[in-house]
Every structure is written in C-alpha cells, then in structure tokens.
Length: 185
Image (cartoon, rainbow, N blue to C red; front, side):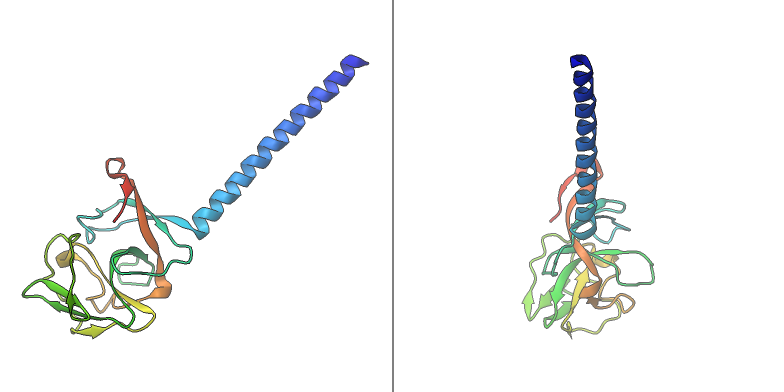
C-alpha cells in the first residue's frame, strides 16, 4: 500500500510539474507577443537614405507604445507611398514649426535657427519639389533621411508631411548586422 501511494504521489508530482512548466511557457509566449505587438516591433531599413546612421537591410527594433515623435528621433513610417514599403527617416520638425532649407549653403533651419546636424552624411543641397519655407501642420511631422542628397522624404511631394497617425514607432536598437548591434541615435 505504501509503494502504491508513493507511485501515485510521484505521478501526481510529475503531472503538476509538467502543468507548471506548460503554464510558464504559455505565459511567457503571451507576454512576449504582447510586448512585440504593443510596445516593440522589428523593422527592416530599405535603401540607403539613412546612411551613415543606418544601412540598407539593417534590422532594427522600434518602440511604439504611446510614442509621440520628437526632433531628431529616427522613426518608422507606414504612410502609403509610391515605393509601397515602410520608410525610416529622422524627425526634423513637428506641428507648428517652420522649416527652411538653403540648398546653396547646404543648411537646414527650423523657426529661423540653423540645425546642428552631426548625424548627416553631407550637407543638404537637394530640396526636391516642396517650396520653402514651409510650416508643418499640427498633427504632422517633417522627416528627412540622414543621407540628405539621396533620400526620398518630406521634401518630395509624393511623401510630403507625415501624418503622426502613420508613425509606427521610434527606432531604438539595431539587431542586424551583428557587427553593428546596439543602440541607434
């Protein structure tokens, strides 16, 4: 009788252990899915418009939960466009700000102040088809790539001002390629 009791206890203990293990796995999957659905997401950089900060095919993690775009943030944009893919750009101006570009000097101005842009590849000589100066409407942002002379961005009418509702999130971390793994600024 004692040996059968021990076997039942061992069997019950094994079943409880398996149930606890499965319960932990399910909770882990649910929390991970929740984080990567509502807080973080993976995105791929297309083309070289963000060079030297990011390169074509870099894999990045973005933060999206209750995110509000701010100057200098690198963002992922889902606004429909001619290239039919997400855009990765840097926020240059937000609603209410006036942007101006002097293509001869290669300088960008926000509300009359020249921007300090240590992240760009070269000065901004290309203005595309938007007439400057231009004021960004409330609820919109003006975004450009760091590779200013090789970037389709808010200076181009087919991209234009970005409705904040189409900002998917802020790029915070590069996960690929491994040799460039780390925080993105």
